[in-house]
Structures are given as C-alpha cells and as structure tokens.
Length: 332
Image (cartoon, rainbow, N blue to C red):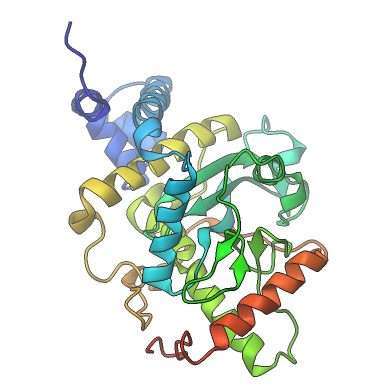
C-alpha cells in the first residue's frame, strides 16, 4: 500500500464533498438552502459539513497549523516580523474575536454574550498572516470581554511549553531582550508580551513605540479580516452548536494557512491585505468589515508586570534610536 500525502487526501475528500462544502464555507449558504439545492435532508447536509471539516483539520493541521517546535523555528518567525514589520524579537501577533452563532437553546449560558450566543476565536499569527496557534470555543460569560489570564495560551506560555529562545541581543545592539508576542490593550503587559503604552498623555517616544507595535500587530488584523473576506460563513450568525462551530472554524483556519502557502496569488491577490513594504496600504476587505466576528473588550484594567514595563521602555528607547527608527509613514 502506497502512502499518500495530506494534500492528496484532501483532494480526494474535496472531490466527494466540494459542492455543498464550498457553498457553506465560501458563500455562507445555510443548511436549509443547501438542502433545497441538492435535494437532501438537512441532517445529511450537517453531517457532510461536519465530517468534512473534521477530516480537513486532521489532514492539514500537522503541516499547516503547528506552533514552532524549536528555538530555530521561533527565530525564523521573529526574522519575518523584523523584515516585514520592523519589530525585532517578535514571535507572534495575538488577537481574539467573538463569532456570532444562532442560539439553539442548547449552547448554555457560558456562550451567551449581551443576550447573544458566541464562541471565542483566539489566535497567534505570524508575519505572513498565517495562524500559528488557534483556540476556538473558550467560554466567556455575559460580556464581550476576553480574560487572557484564563486562557490555555497563557498557561502554556507560563509553563514554558512553547520553548521560546532565551533572551538575546537586539539587532545591531548590545541590549539583551527576550522574544515576545505582541498584543493590543486587551492583553496584559508581561516580559513575554508587549502591549501599547496607555493613556492620552504619551510622549513622542511612547507614541512611536505604539505605532511600531501596531505595525507588528497588523498580520493578526489581516488574518481575521481575510477570513471574513474569503469565507462568507463569517458574515451571518452560524446555526451550529459551539462544539460544531469549533470544528468548522479549525478547518477554515487550516485551509487559510494552506492557501496562503500553496495558492497565495489566487487566495491573496493584490489588494485584500495590508502591505508590509514600509508604508501600510489598506486592503479592499477593509470596506467589508469582519462580518459577525466582533472584537473582544477589556473587562477590567489589564495588569502590567514590573519586568514588562521595564522591557517596554527598553524597546521604546531602542526603536527611537536614529539608526533603527522608521518614520510613521513607514519609510526609513
């Protein structure tokens, strides 16, 4: 018996199920409309969609949805952020969105937010807007808030399970600095997670740091927006239970990464993503928004560790040096 690659397996699965699956994912068709279109029962449509999602995730996750496993692989990710977004020692951009789902009465109160049902999609993204880490279905009760402290990502990070490289000198400098993730104000400032300076009275150096941090976060914004742009299922409330939404979303994320790598010109034509060549150019998907994916909110003031604040200032001073500084229009 000859072994076949995950891509060959995927082609076989796609030939069998592609019509309904494509309409559901790409066009955002409902089970009811697919049932009428193909003259099959709604339960059969649901079974096909969910089984295909499971198979796609199983076939692609090992090759197309994996965190770096070695220090060398993490350094490769960091090099991408340095070259494309001018932020050193960054190993991933963090973001989270809530996906609106239709309440079937079976979801449970922990998935209800502001009288609606939703699941949380939290992710870490590389410099090319490909997902490194995805968690779907984390429970948040009664609000749009996101508690990083309760996340599996935070626990894995604290336990050293990501095997990040040790602190090393910044480029063209003797300053030793750890490898870090970047996030917005929803996330806490830590020694392994850089966030913006808060408040309205930031000084020029802090403002420039915030600008550069925003650039480094751009791939995460791109990734979520491209999902909404390419997969129209995210433009209407999904009529599935949270566990099934998780299966569908994981399959879409795997396909996103696969298409970014194998079919990038067709999947990412000029326009639908923000450029990284110094100046930021808004992609065409900006006018479409995020569909039913909602930004998460900060429930309470996020924490700032003393070590995180010290490192934030070190990076601020480093980025502000004339030899490193990139003007806010993106040029050097």
